[in-house]
Each structure stands twice: as C-alpha cells, then as structure tokens.
Image (cartoon, rainbow, N blue to C red; front, side, top):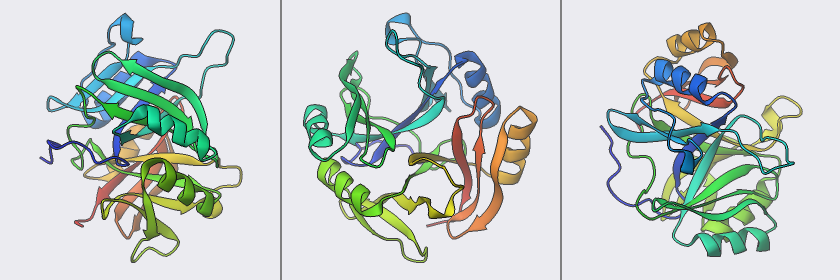
Length: 259
C-alpha cells in the first residue's frame, strides 16, 4: 500500500475534497463506490468529514456553504496544492492575476487553507500543513492517483502556477497535446487544453481515483444515480472514465498502467 509518510513537496496536489448539498448522501455514495469510511464531523469545523480507506485519510466531504447573502458554490471536487507559506502564496496569487475566493484561514491545528482561482478561472485550494499533511494513501484502488488542470489558456496557466507555486510545465512524453506539471524534477500532475472538451466546459481541475475495473465501477455509479460523461476508454496511462456523482460532482476513475 503506497502510504504517504514524507511531507508533500510545495506545488504537489496533496488533498481533494467535495462540498455537497447533501453531505450524508455523498458519504453513503462514496462509501459504496470506493469503500471509504466517514461521518459528519464536529460543528466547529462545519461538519467536515475526513474519509478514510483502511484507516488512512484519503479525501474530505463537507456541506456546501456560502457567506450570508451569497449563492452556494456548485457541488464539486476541489484539488488542493500544498505550500510551505500560505500567506506568501495568497499574495502571489493576486500578483499573478488570480483571484482569492476564500482568504487564508486556520483549520484548527491541522493547517492553513485558502480557495483561489487561476487567471483562466480554474478553482483550486492551497494547503499549508501543520498537523495534517494531506492524503495518507495514494495510488491504491479507492484513493487519489492523479490531478490535472483543464484550461483554455495554456501560456497564462503555465506562467501563473510557476509564479505562485514553482510548478514547471513540460510536454508529456507519449501524450501529444498533454503537459506534465513538475516540482523538484518530478511529475505531480498534468495539464490539457479545453479544445477537445464539449463547448462551454469551464476551466477546472479534475481529480482521478484509482479503481481496479473502470467498467464495473461506472456501472455501479450509474445504478446509484451517477452519470458517465465519458464512458470507459483506453489511453496511454490506463483505462479511464469521466463521471459525475448523483449530485453532479465530476471526477475521473482510472485503472492505471504501471509507470
């Protein structure tokens, strides 16, 4: 089991979470789909639930919330990139043309977080660990295995993520039109243009969860009220599908090939 025991290198996707209109329904859905265990958390943390797989943290699920007088955000999975200085990252977001949606805030003693949008409109989180580094299992069936950015402006996104988090972008070998996000000389995620996606698709980060059999996973998801947006297909990294849960949150499932 690929347990994460070392701190995440700044710029690396370290956590994903879902804000759902019906939190309990989401907890039940992902328990059945991926085998996660989780329950609604303490009121002082907004009921946020840390879901576990084999006793290790894999993702968060919370209720959608918005400041008084503001509309609720859409039900969506959010990718969080790690930093060693949340305040400096927030300043860098603004200086690089991004937008701060939720300013830096302390989350108990676990860490410091913020929600931002890059200049192309893709929303993501930035996490500074204190007591909690992030996902404790990755790459196993039921756990996060990959994250990528889908954007309408590759040059703008490249400049932004380099300036804010030190991420370098290079062409991905063997995958024409796809790019690798690198930190410390290691590929930690990907980036693609929106040209091949349905018209009107907004810029976004997409979280991928590993599964043993994407076809049976998608069948199960559809039977429980989800949708197959891109049915299972074979590609360079494995067999994958893009799906939406019953509340509309989009994510990918993949049976990855050995790297």
